[in-house]
Length: 475
Image (tube, rainbow, N blue to C red):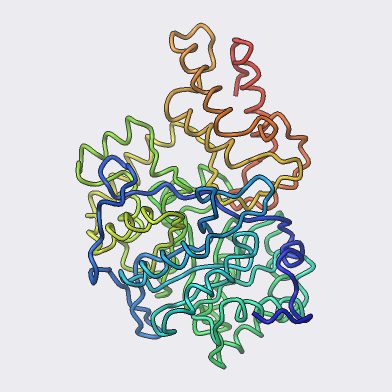
């Protein structure tokens, strides 16, 4: 990479993004081994990957896409260190990319904002060791902060992506996370319209610097509908759109969060227009891999040889309008297990799809978990709170029956001990929920629109009550 003065530093770039430190997601919990136990013993076959055809280019895209936002770090088992300066294990990234390509994966998704701003750089190093025709790169124009929304700054961000990725063209370029924010339409216009950047990207597509242009959607449905109406009016052609799709979000996304939109609608609108869908969050940050025991047993009873996670991946990959399904694979066993599921894909039947998005999803909704996908867009907290780790632990205890609110309950003592011991092991005391001052800096970055300070205060009150052996506060 050219380190001349025209290139901004990675740390300065992240500050300009408005993300401060890292956007480093916790490792996805995935498996295709029976019982969801990670294993390197099950070797995926070579030459069996399922592919989907890009209708614009005719190119074959692997159904499994490699999400480069959960890269392995040195000595930290894939997680960022508390100081926010985790060192990416480039050797391991290289090994996993090599293995993925050998087994047919050719779609790699990154962003200037991922992994403390290091993802594009590390991805570029790993992929540049292969022939350019062996892989497709997807990256994003992640100009979230007003400091990066001028025409000049946005163009600089795009050009920097080309440099970091060591390529002359981007195969799939996305407007990143449109629909977020309190005033989603105003934010969208500031990022892409008023500064002329959307016109610039369309011109780059004409010149071949961008081969496919699309957007990733979160939040306000008015933005999603508006962008598709632009195509209906002939104002633009979207080559693909990235949406969240899984068996819980198919019919329940709006119930989980009123700002979200059911995947059934999103996917339906894309297929009407023959726009390929790229799928994110097939496991909802791991929540659909670690289900409540009662639900997991139902899935295993239907197919004892398939893991809970593989049901979710098969669900996301079955619709024919899906081009690729993204998974953030921190460890080699994540990659191997997901390769097993898609090499080749065994599509779910219509009956199995209905069973998941109706009966199983309805039962799961009764657990009222916090809809955190562990994307870590809320991080870093200026007061050091590990927001995703707190929510992950709370959800885990909720699904395992260790969130009991009445001290007189027979299982209260056992559940209390399990929650508190697990909490201290999962989250250092200085990073726990009781240190939240309610500044709200985290909330605007959350794609799921979680009321993060309120949830942290609720969990802090719950923890204090059960420490004292009292009834927990009412919801």
